[in-house]
Length: 164
Image 1: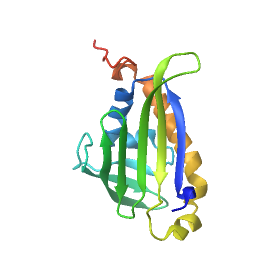
Image 2: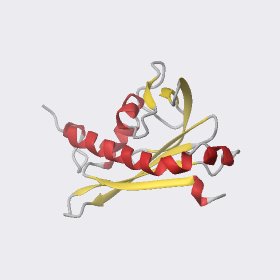
Image 3: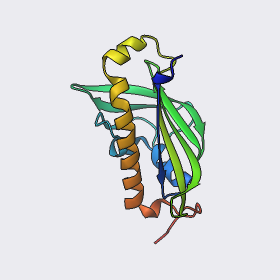
Image 4: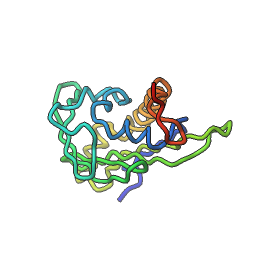
């Protein structure tokens, strides 16, 4: 398996791992944080919150509209979530409590696109995925950071939730 088929990017986000996990586990929010511009929305019949083995569909657009079905293949509440679709790519998020440069408590979020077990890797390379994914992952993490900053009511770093 070639390491180039595992693209990984990390970013510190000033929010609790549990609050970030709640966003990642909500398919309805995937289009909000998607940095590739291809995720358009969740299909209405899927779960509101993901769990191990959950199947959920997404409305997509990459030059044409299409739908894709995913299955959650890794799930550790507050720490790790991953899903894959029929072709075998895995989209994974790893969450680790961390401190920012100023000592502020938060989370180191790592997003991975893992195609190491996909057959036909040469097609992925020819289609430009390996060139595009580093920037797409960085943009997704930036959007996730912005979403968390704009929604401080989702939870504090200590895990408590703000209530009105």
